[in-house]
Image 1 (cartoon, one colour):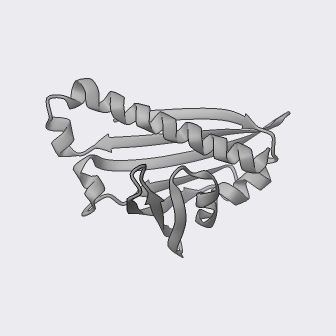
Image 2 (tube, helix red, strand yellow):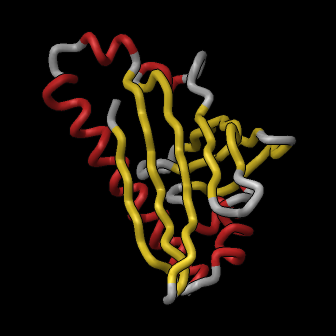
Length: 152
């Protein structure tokens, strides 16, 4: 399972960043390619994203854990029965916030499982996991850039 983790210290108090990362309505402000969020209810939401080629893509998510103390949140992408299921078996994003003397250390971890079909492919063991991890790293770096713009 490819797991990608990025951390950065952002010059903003944890409470300010928590309000941003814990509310799906704020995702278009900081998460790459998200243009809007729809159907936010209870702990579920839908991201509407724009690909590099200008195609609109929708992805559904469920918040599976939210730390009451404002230090962490985990959401999973609902991939079954979607076009994402061709590549992904599961995808889970975890964000943790740790107070620091110069702001907040934000860590974003993306854990992905390739679909059974992709895992059986001859190329996946060598190339697929690397490509998925590299794309995830770029996404997480962009997300941290977005939080830095908001918080800094």
